[in-house]
Amino acid sequence: MRITYFIFIFFTISLGLASRKYSYLLPPFLADHAGDALWAMMVYFGFRFILPRNQLSASIIFSILFSFSIEFSQLYQANWINRIRSTTLGALILGKGFLTVDLIRYAIGILIGAVLDRFILVFTKYK
Image 1 (cartoon, rainbow, N blue to C red):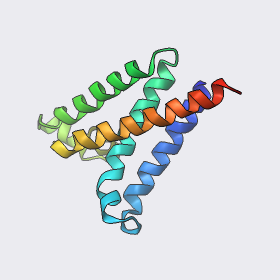
Image 2 (image 1 turned 120 degrees about the vertical axis):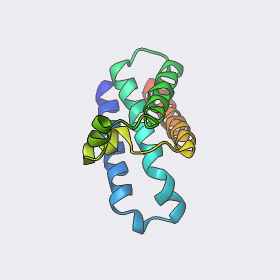
Image 3 (image 1 turned 60 degrees about the horizontal axis):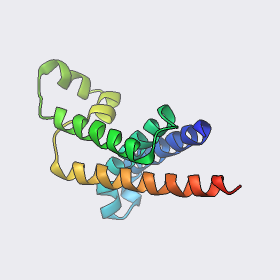
């Protein structure tokens, strides 16, 4: 099952990067919200990869706690962490500034990931 989650992580990262790079090709709503939702979905699949035997609910909770912690950490604006955030990788992982709407985007991305995961589990269970 881990290989499935690894593939989903890679695919989700690819979609997330594409949603940023080609945002001008997307409808405005998707361009504004997809990247953060996909980031949180990737976090969810990451927890499923690390903890494949845990219940879906545990992965959902861990993902929400992790994602929300990253967002709330953006309220801390020390020079050293802002230098990290100013790099491409730092901005992708840590973000740049706190936005309440990001919490909603994360929750939706995690929920979509959990629903996809549930379908995967049901599909593979009966094979």
